[in-house]
Amino acid sequence: MGFLRKVWAIVAKDVAAELHTREMVSAMLVFSVLSLLVFSFALDLRGAMARAVAPGVLWATVAFAGTLGLSRSFAREQQTGCIDGLLLAPVDRSVIFFGKSLGNLLFMAVVDVVLLPLFSAIFDVPLLRPGVLVVTALGTVGYAAVGTLLAAIAVNTRAREVMLPILLLPLAVPALIAAVQATGYLVEGGTLAEVGGWVRLLVAYDLIIVAVSMLTFGYVVEE
Amino acid sequence: MREPGQDRLGIALTGLSAVVLFVALGMAFLYAPREATMGDVQRIFYFHVASAWVGFFAFFVTFLAGVGYLARGERQWDILALSSVEIGLTFIAMTVVTGSLWARPVWGTYWTWEPRLTISAVQLLIYIAYGMLRAAIDGPRRKARFAAVYGIVAFVTVPLSWFAIRWWRTIHPDILTGGGGMAITSRMVHTLLVSLAAFTLLYASLLRQRVRLERATDALARLRARIETT
Amino acid sequence: MSNLLYLLCAYIVFWALTFVLVFSIWVRQRRLEREIAALQARLEEVGRGKGVASER
Image 1: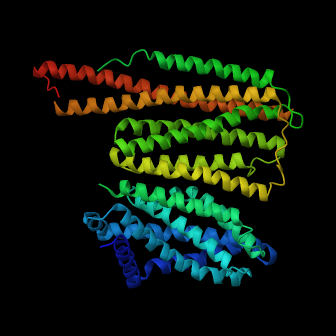
Image 2: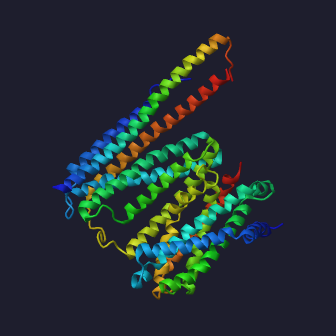
Image 3: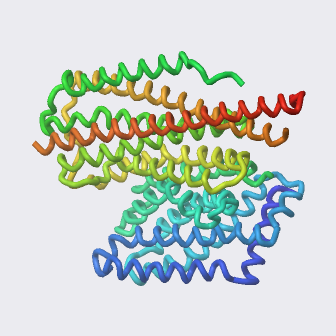
């Protein structure tokens, strides 16, 4: 069975499980909307101010909702004992990593796809531009990758899921800054070329973080 | 078991770092000039930057120790990692606090999102997360392994964070701190270099002490195990 | 005037934190050495009492 087929098998398993229960994505979505509500009340977002902080509120929401999904993904593995089955199978650990992180990326992407139009409407900002979509995708990829690695670690600690945001958020700083800055510029009418610096940073972040996560993932899941 | 007797190198290191530290202190107050715009308050700069440098360097050592542990699986690498974190954490805390105490008189606010202070705050949080991670894991091997992985991934993001924060602050300069505003003279550079040397020696000295402490803790645990089996 | 106070506080912070770290390591080291010595003494007693101590 080829590398991609094995990875896809893991992704398919996670997607099937999620379609069956729908607990994770629905929780992430409801949380996102509630988070949006809280931000709106907390910052009294209207008019020009709303447009200015929209990228920031968007990414803060994505980051927090992401931690929900990421920790749930591995908590479920542990509960069902599935991770042991995966480890017994003669697959390279990187297959498991790509499978899990792709699955997590998919779930986060679903949330992104719902949030972008929602935020566009509520904040009156044009978030559905191709440039914004590219930036959102790049940011989500990096976040999902390092989030998957750290979720695998967090689920094995005494504090479990609570540990994940503490571990993840400081490491997501480059992606968060780049994504928010680039998005902010793009919705003001900038082009992707003009935010090239931020895009390059996101790409560099993604490449480095995926490589390091993939290389170290094996050490996290081995027993 | 050998008596934990005279650690000649450790004592020499401690002595040397104390000497250079006092020299740096003297230079900061007597040799370095009074800065044009900020006045004497600017003298915080030397130890503030030196501690920032050591804080980052300690993190780098933790990164290397993490790689070493994953590669070899030997306890000595884990000892190095946790020791460097403990000391690095102290220095980064110093950086953040002294940076805040510098910001207040100069810019009127206890906090400013200027690059060095911000990246130090990020590193501080990573250090704390590392410590919490270690505390939340049972079993020495697992603790060492997970900590090593986190140390590696976390360190790799720091240069990226640094660039991101720098660019962010270039595009949106802090209205309060503006571009910087410090007139650097050669005497300041000398003082800074000596401060860096002093802090690096201090780090090495403290690291050595902390590593020895951890080794002694291990020895104690082994002794206890022996007693229980007899 | 109060600017110099901040300068002073910053240097106090530096010395205080360094001292806290050094002291904490020193205290732990002392405690450890005492425990090791106590356990070593116990081990020798047990060894004498049981004849040949199990060497590994």
